[in-house]
Amino acid sequence: MKKFIIKTLGCKTNQVESALIAEILTKNGYLEINNMLEADYYILNSCSVTQIADSKNLSFLRRAKRENPQIKTVVTGCMAQLEKDTLLKEGFADFVIGNHEKNDIAEILKNEKNFCVSDIFSHDKFRYEKLHQTHRTRASVKIQDGCNNRCTYCTIPFARGKNRSNSINNIIEQINLFEKEGYYETVLTGIHIGQWGEDFEKKQNLQNLLEEIEKTKINRYRLGSLNPLELNKEFIDFLSASERFCPHFHLSLQSVCDKTLKAMNRHYSTEQIKELVKYINSKFTNVFIGSDIIVGFPNETEEDFETTRKNLEEMEMSRIHVFPYSRRKGTIADRMENQIPNEEKKRRVGIIQKISDTKLNHFFIKNLNTENEVIIEKIRDKKTGLLKGVTKNYINVLIDADDKYKDTLQKIIISDFSNQNEKMIAKIVT
Image 1 (spheres, rainbow, N blue to C red):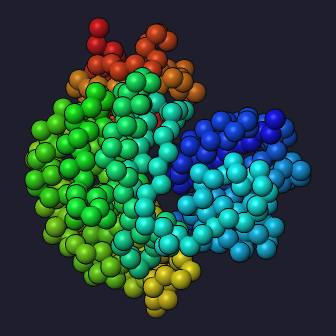
Image 2 (image 1 turned 135 degrees about the horizontal axis):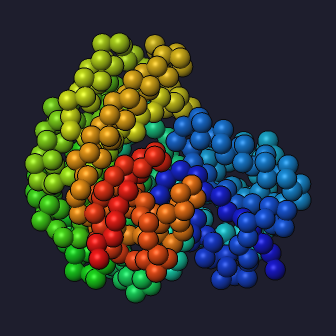
Image 3 (image 1 turned 135 degrees about the vertical axis):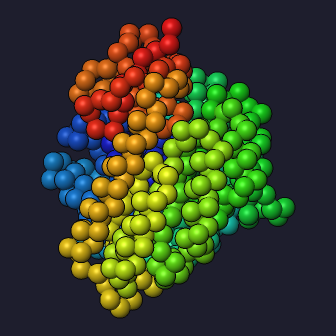
């Protein structure tokens, strides 16, 4: 029996696809293990969103070969799609499998076809296979793939192709399957979930899908990252009226400076972002609003950065994921003049990170002594030994309780902060 290890880097979409890869291989007689020395294949489901991600990919591949020179390295994911020739020629991978071919991995390994990467833009239909187990407390459902946007800094559309939506029937089938297997929450994920349904002959939108999910028995659902343009007042009103929607938004902002947004080819304004955040807060109590921000974009002056900083300070958000701009070969931004030095990018990241820390602290204070709903995970927190879970509004909590509460949905009272970073203490309501 052939044995494999699978390592996943990057987004939740990759996590879903890795779970499916493992399931496909297991059905075909392979055994998933954790011991590198005993494994026949090391499968890396790669991310390529930044230079750091690419470096991590290569580091993991080198480590696998160093620990077990006989192991066969298999690279799939976005780096496989974008850097297929380099991975084979430089000897980093024994097999390179494209994003569209992930589900064919058992056949590819059986036939020892070491290169299987098709033109991602030649595929215009979503490829769906049922997934039974995710190895996670919350089950993610992939609702679409690809992206039709052309942001000047991003290579992901070239790794994932054009927007391709999973059908409502497939999505509902998958959610119903997870619900029967005991999952309480589903996370709707994809490369650009706000574009779901735009490629159908009879166009639909994300709200149309959620209206059908509301009819299922799943206890709650959560949305992945959204472009601000995809959240209008009607959609927010719909979500605020739902008892199943988790009040947690992650907004793909990237900047809060009009000049920088234009250079990024992001088609919204700072004022639209501010109004959106304000409206979300007006419709929900203790809603978690996270965001992505890139600093150090080419031509971002100190004045531009200050504009973003001030706007972020003013907006009522819960957390800011801040990243230094990363040059990606083949993008428009890579060819722009006035690239910002790394040290300056690092300085700007530090400033925004402090703002994020302050906002998260304020969000925690707002949630003290409030009742919430939590899914308790199967594995205890390693540092404290306490049960851990995630509330409906995306707070990581630690709970001193018996094992009988593992993998259950419980009402809790959030009572205190934890010494552990970004967690709160809670008690089960009995």
